[in-house]
Image 1 (tube, rainbow, N blue to C red):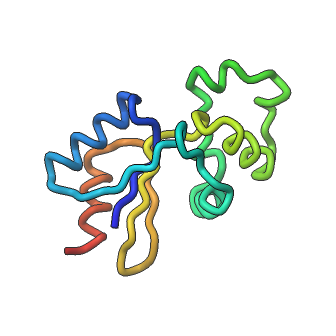
Image 2: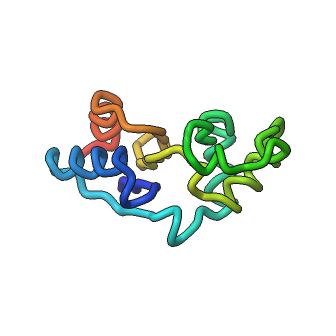
Length: 122
């Protein structure tokens, strides 16, 4: 099973959806803006990838934060911000179940997508 997390109208998300459709990959979609991302999901992502990988410091949501909010130095601070402002989470985050467990991918790269899908097996 593949689940793509992100924001529907994001151009990078549209590339990920198009790639999946072009390659016949079935996926579920979780919209950050409409559904948020619960701490129970964010925490394992942070543990596996590091919170620095997940926080989008290049987007408009980041630029709208105060300097104090941007001064993230701990996982707990990052989690709180990502819960409050889901648009801060880079996208897409792709979660795939493989024989060796759950694998995560952040961002869209066609080669990494292909490797991840191949690892999910038939």
